[in-house]
Image 1 (cartoon, one colour):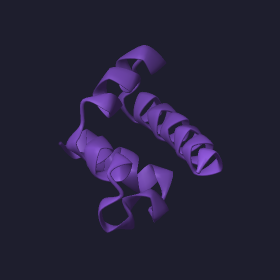
Image 2 (cartoon, rainbow, N blue to C red; image 1 turned 30 degrees about the vertical axis):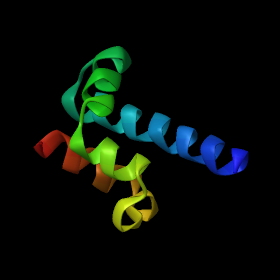
Image 3 (tube, helix red, strand yellow; image 1 turned 90 degrees about the vertical axis):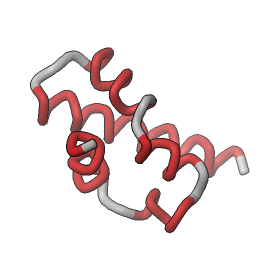
Length: 65
């Protein structure tokens, strides 16, 4: 299970980087947006295999929230 956690954390980091680039904001601000999003809750709870979707797609979904 630890490998899954590490892989998810790496995915989170890539999504946060995408959000920062899309919105032209700092990584810290992007991290706040990511961790307070409904999409993050869905990913972390394993809903609908959201973790299988591309980083860019998930970042776009978060930016739309």
